[in-house]
Length: 248
Image 1 (tube, rainbow, N blue to C red):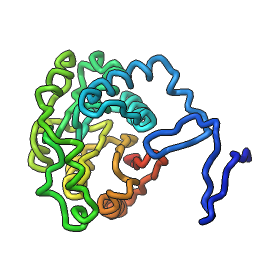
Image 2: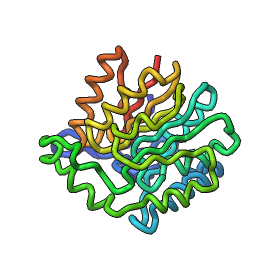
Image 3: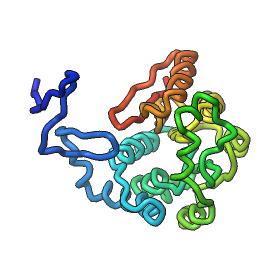
Image 4: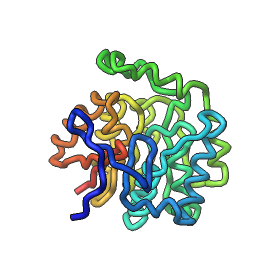
């Protein structure tokens, strides 16, 4: 087994030394990250990041976007629509439609659900507020609905649904789902989405949980772990902070 050079800290933890293949978004590694140089991924990632550049400046979430693109491309081999609960400006979904050439998927729909005004604070529990989740709306403030509509106007099979989950879930007219992304920064709507879509997910469908491993979202992790256990599945934690479920 190859050993990466590392510096040991007083608490026993190690810091991986350079040269680093990736060092952003809480993830630093020497391991191969050549997907960043893949022309198809680079073009898709640029499209996604362009949706947020005017609001957040430079943002580096390439490895998270790669996970979403991989899961969506996997979904092309399955029967069913794509769903994203928690869209913001459309970073992930815009990258995906570019990466998989979604306009060629005439028989599929990509359903995008969001308030398009930030986190639905009325959904937050007191433990989540104590962790500062409500203050995250400083990053997500401002209505981006018109921007998102303009972003996806070239994609007639993308359906945009405005409003807070779970109240909008019934508007998703999908009998089968082949890819599901959940990124709503709060436990209650995320569990509600999982409960609504679980039986619609086809065997082999990948669920990407964007906030699963982040420290401020431990309430979500606990709730999603409980949901997964109730369905007899596990959640794979990724070093990106995401979690993955594969529907049996």
